[in-house]
Structure formats: structure tokens, C-alpha cells
Image (cartoon, rainbow over all chains, first blue to last red):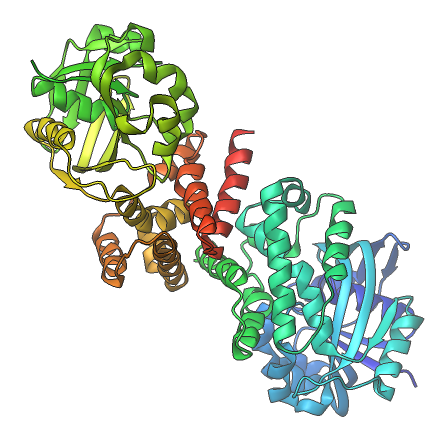
Length: 311
Length: 311
């Protein structure tokens, strides 16, 4: 029998991967909040560069208690919703089930470990460009690959386990490009090399990526912020080579003008993922005696903007 | 015969001090640009907490060449206009005259020295809260004191000279509180302790001083920026005690909600004084091997915003 998946957060990310797993024959259960009734009646609709499809009937739930216990619970909420996890996770998780955390930032696994224990957790990174454009309606614009790694409470590389291969295999059968990786901490810091400068400055300066790259002052600031992320990673024992910084710059130069998801959250007056993307890396670096002044300043600016935006 | 004054830039600052000097019997000549015809016909109107007054007839000029050569040329332009000085200064200045530079920031004197020589320059600091509210119409809200110091190309303390006392005496006769100081460089860095955090963050975060002080994150950032200014001053051999930082914070806590003049410039799509307030101090600190990462980041953000604002 195929593995069962509970999707906690059926938005641009959870809706996309969940729909692909469902279409590939996996036994998928979607938790929804505001869109619950709409999706129960009309299903999920995916517009995608890989081909549009509609799933007219999917298993949808308005409350976590109603989800059958699953082999894999995919956390696809924004990290700003993670305070809900103590209520949402336990009902949906089989005794030997795995929690797969596909979120942005650093350190979410430590919080989830306090709920389900440290041995049930796989960390995931997603390289996906998609938006929720309406209830149950997701537009997949570009990319889509995932990377999975075992969580280690001591933040040590854990190697590639059987369950990692099994979950990776499911995503591959769903047509998703999968990378299985050894060191979750390194992977999360590498992703921050892009995320910290562009997410932060796109909000602080109300700018798209191309504007930040075109102006020599902000381009220089992007580079300095990236180097501070590299310094933070180094403080926790992870080496990110200079060539990776250059690759991120080059890739962004080639991207079409892009509004980061943090900027979209800000414009829609939703809470921003400031703690997972900025606060947690800063605290991890500080615990390792590294000071990252520019990232710290950006964090302080974003905290101010976030509070005013929602206040 | 009383000393003659040319006022280069008859705005909120030059208009206020020039009108006070004129009313006190000094021989004052105002250079105006857009308001020239209006002020020629209607004079200057000062609304002030110290008492309103109108000067129906003042000496006004639309071109620097028409101003009689004066004993003191007061530069009261925004520093963003200083590229005009090579044309404006020489015609208005007597052979043994003095250029009095009342502007915000650091290093303006070096540029003016290249025009008139290093021995003709007095630096001035103004603690004035006033706005130009219409052509030839100035509203003086609060404060008004000035501090004057001799310029030294080597940035050494120069002591209190006779001409400093003479100019100070004129301002005192005009009812202005005057302090004569020894060390222009120290005075300019001390003023930056307030100016850098509040001018910069008020624009970068679209915030008034009270908002910046109320939020604990931005309050902390203000303190860190102030300490970087203190570090910059230390790098050029100037001691600003911690008690001065605390006084600036306490004074700002007591101020009513305040929009900095840099924020007003930004909102009116005028160029901001980014180079004199941020760029020059950063370059001075760098030349003395000090790195001020937060001020540098604020500078880069402001350069981006300034360029886009006017582009």
C-alpha cells in the first residue's frame, strides 16, 4: 500500500506538492482552513508550466483531528503559523510516522522536535516558484525541486536513511526533482545566502530583485549580506565557498524581475517569516560567537516594519 | 560700519538667520532663486516662537554677480547644492571676507577651501527647527542656537579667534544663542550622533522619531548607530562620552513626534544630504581604518532610495 501523506497547509507549496503526490497515486489528505468548503466541493486546480491539471475530488479536512493518522505529515505552513503545530501535528501522525518540514529559514526542526520527539523529523527545502491565486487554485510558475535531509538535534550530518529514500521516491514518482542530502544545517544556511539579502531588502526598500541588482549600492549590500551569511555558516562549522555566492548573484541576474514571497506577504499585510529567516540564524551565529551586523540591522528593520504593518 | 552679510540660500535656515541679522541692523544681502521676485516685492515674513515679524524691504538678488562683496558669506544651502558654490561664492566675498558654512554633515569645508582657500572659512552648526512654508515665508518652530568654529585643513582644534568673536557678536545682537568652539571636527561628529540614526532611519523606515523610539528593535538600532558614530569620531581622535549618547536618546524621548528634514526632503522628492551626512563620515572613518557596518548599510539603502526617488 502506498504511503499516506497529510498536508498541513494547502497553499502555494503544500497544495502544489500534495496535488502532485495525489495525482501520482499517493494517499493524500489535505488540511485547509479558509478554503475548506471550496476545495471539498470543487477540488484543487493546478496551473503549471509542467501541464495544468484539476483534481476534482481530494480528501479535505477542516480540523486536524479529522485527518486519518498518516505515514508522513508535510508541514507546508508559513513559519509564522508554527505556533499552531502542537495542536495540528499529533492527531495526524502515525506512531512511527515522519514529519517532513518544508519551510524557509533555520531551526524550525528544534521546535517540532519538542512536539513529536527528535527521531521523527525530516527537513525539506523547496526551490519552487508558485502562488496561490484563489481558493484551491495554485499557479506554478517555475522550478519545483526539493531537497530532503535527516534532522539531527546536535546538527550533525546524518547520512541518507531508508526513510529518506522512501519519501524521496514518492516525490520522484510525482515528477518532482529530488536531492537527498547529508547535512540539513549546511543546506539551510546555503538557502539563506539567497533568502536573507533578497527577502530582507525587497521589503525594507520596496524593491524587486532586478532593482536591487541594477543599483551598484544595493548590489554591493547584497554581496556583503551574503558574505555575512557565509560567516554565520562558518561559525557553526559549515563551509560555503565564494563560488556559491557568485552563483547566487549570477542566477539572480538572469531571473526576471521577482517579488520575493516575503514582499508579497508584507504587501498583503500578512506576518513575515522574520524569525525563521533572520532571528534564528542570528541567534545561532551569536551562540557561536559570530556577529553579523548587517543581518542584525535588517532583522531590526523588518521587525519594525512587520509590527507596524499588522498593528 | 556694521559687517555685511551675503546669505547664499534664503530658505528655512538662511532666511531665518538673515532676517534676524537684518532686523538687528546688519547690512544683509539675500541670494534667492525661485522666490526672488516675490521677496523683492513683498519682503520676508518670519513667524516665530520668539515673536513674528515682517521685513517689507530687504536686499535681494537673483544672481550672485549682483551681490556687493560682503564681509561674511553665509552658506545656508542644502549640501546637495554645493556643486553651485564655485560660481556663487567668489563674486559675493570680500578679499579678506569669511565664508560661514552652516550645513549638516561633515567635510563641506574641505570642498569650500578649494574655492576660497583654507584661511577664509568658519564652520557653523545650527540647532534650529524651522520650515519654509511659502515664498519668503519662514516658520520658526523651536530652538535656534548656533555654534561657530574655525576651520583647520588638518582638522586640528584652532581656538577662538577675533573674527569668530566678531561674527558671534553679530548673531548675539540678533538675539541668537551663540557658542564659540575650539574643535570643529568634534562638533560635527557630535551632531552626527543624532543626525545619522534619526535622519537615516526616518527615511529608510518611513518613520517619525517617536515611532523609532517606541519600538524596542529600532530603539536598539538607534543606539547601535549612535555607538558607530562615536567609534568613527574615536578613529579620528575625538572622544564623545557615552553620557552624550544617553543625552541624545533622552532628549529625543522628550521631543514631540518629529519628521526629520531628510524625511521631508525625501517626501518632496528633493535630493537628500546623503553624502555630507553619511558618505563623508564613512570615508573619514575608513581613512582612519574604522569600519562602521550599520552606517554603511544605511548609506547604501539611502543612496538607492534617493536615486529611485528622483529617477
